[in-house]
Length: 383
Image (cartoon, rainbow, N blue to C red):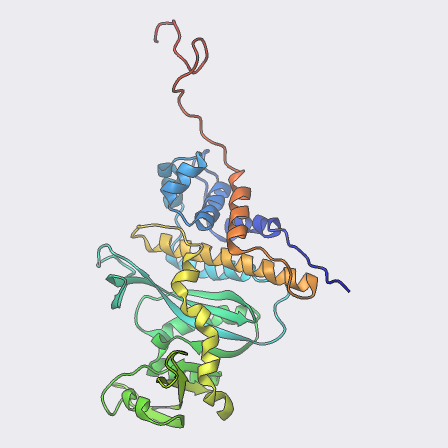
């Protein structure tokens, strides 16, 4: 029997994009030329085209760049308001029927480079990368379903205190309604406070251990043979922390089969068999490791020093990705299997074409025309 395929219509997800932004975000109209609905469509277009506000104004031919800038600045939301609005916005883009099976949760750090003044509020320093040491840093919690990734948590990282970041993401993950199988954390979260905070809650976790210290630090773990062991240390001014550690090996490439690399993971709530396969389990989050590619696919361009504007663009970009993933998920559910699904580029192109119809190009001054017409020169004297 020939299998039928269900081709979803991207318009089913285009309409909620601007509607969600208008409902969740505290947008206010600016005069009569730019209502709140127009600002919501402009935000969605910034993510669909991945362009700046100036490029958006030129492509639309509607309100000018200065008008749009003043409109967003006049009704700018506070960072505290965005901390509550953007996670709720991401949850609204999840499918009505989430996956029944428990999913794995990947918690990652995203560093967006900044090349301006290092004294700008909201920046976080770090290791030199992409020509700078200053970054706008965000933390995301991504649900890793088979073949799909939904962002269910978003938080700003304002300091190097990682337990505070986890405390901000945890209620967002619980509010999503997804059942979590285990947590896969980024290596930047490795510290005594995070390990102690997770051990108190007894959650299954997998966390890479960086190579630090001298012979008495974690560097000594990389010289041990593969196996399971315990590692204990006392942080400065704190209590001793003990964690289970798995030392595994994996091949670096096919051309050099003899060359091996040692990986060390701290784990909790896992069986010994799962811990020995820690390298294979952790590889499932490699799609999140390419954070610069995924986060930048629907991210509006800007060189602004305003933290609220950059945070807003990040939330809008992740919202568009959630809508696209939900569209593909619902198409597969309706077809009973893999269906013909639009790519992200097709989805964004259809979204931009639909939202662009809501703008009316402004009238431009006539530049010329045939004699006697409204755009050409006339014999009447100037007034």
